[in-house]
View 1 (cartoon, one colour):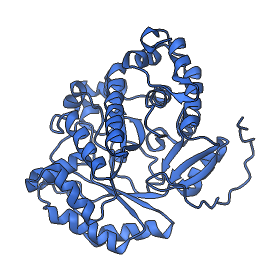
View 2 (view 1 turned 90 degrees about the vertical axis):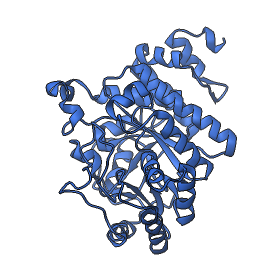
View 3 (view 1 turned 180 degrees about the vertical axis):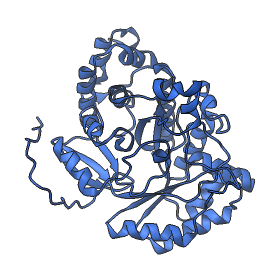
Length: 394
């Protein structure tokens, strides 16, 4: 049966795995699944696909820390509650030593990665970024530095007059390990330019990520949904990431490590206050819609190895269900979070023990990893006895 002739969700799901291969499906076929396939069947196929990419009964997690080095930003995303415009009384930019002190706390608990993002700060020269990376690399040689989202790279390029590829080259030479996947939101300009008019087109984000992959930097891809977009927009977003993944892998064998999705948080921002506050009540997405998106993304992303669950936005309990819906990674400890929490999320920190217990409660074995998904030595924390039986995996 050729993929063109497949029209029903039953036919499409039957095609997804053939002869031990994860076959790509089209945008139209994915839309049929999104609109019509029952969730239990989607979850079952997504679990099977997960086993093709990551066989075994384990789930990974990362011990890391988020650092927001500045909150000064000129982009004014309507859904962001974290940023402050230049010269606002609440602005800050951290020094090398302030950031280093936070990373020392990460080292004390056996962490391996810092995820550092801020805003597009027009007052910071190139030397701020390169000196910071060199300083952190010297003082924390075992910590992977995944810093500056694509929009921040564009901001640095605008300030310095350099092409974005040259900015990335300078940062890598200073010791940068990778780029966070933030700022993607929705890579469909019809949606993107409404919620973040100053952030630039989807092409810009994809261009910077492609350049980062050309330089051998570690990258991940993200999706924020619930802005009132249609399922077709979410699938088009995933399709653009899948296309870049294919071209990058063909070009240099380096692409996105993972794909992470979460619903937009609307408690404390301008987008939530739109339509006399109705957006906060009517938009976003709940657990059922989120889990459906996780399953769909695992089925659609045939060339991205890992799907990560988002506990900071959905809660630990929903992230556990996501592990049964196609995700193979539960995310990271974070230690510190200022962006999502500013928009209304209250649970933004998790200990290594908490993530381990969440994984074990779903019947999986927790495995610590680094930013590149290499497995690390894992010491299981001590827990009180689990009073209810842990699910037995087939």
